[in-house]
Each structure stands twice: as C-alpha cells, then as structure tokens.
Length: 39
Image (cartoon, rainbow, N blue to C red; front, side):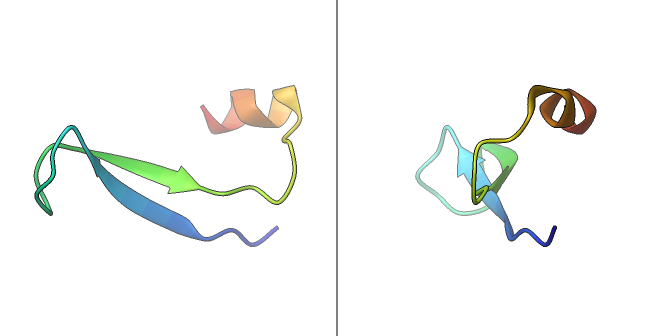
C-alpha cells in the first residue's frame, strides 16, 4: 500500500513552528489491528 505522508505544523500559523504531526489520507477506513500497529 503506497501512501502520501504530509507534515502539518499544529498549534501555529507560521511554517516550521508549533508541533509537527505526520498525516496520511487513507483511501478507505483502516482495520483496527492495522491502526494499533501504526500507533
């Protein structure tokens, strides 16, 4: 499964500040056991 991953700067309106968070948009709802492994 190939996924695009984005970095979002949370809690700020300025680039490269705040709290960085990785975000990926899934094509469908993920199974619970997969989400536990990712976490």
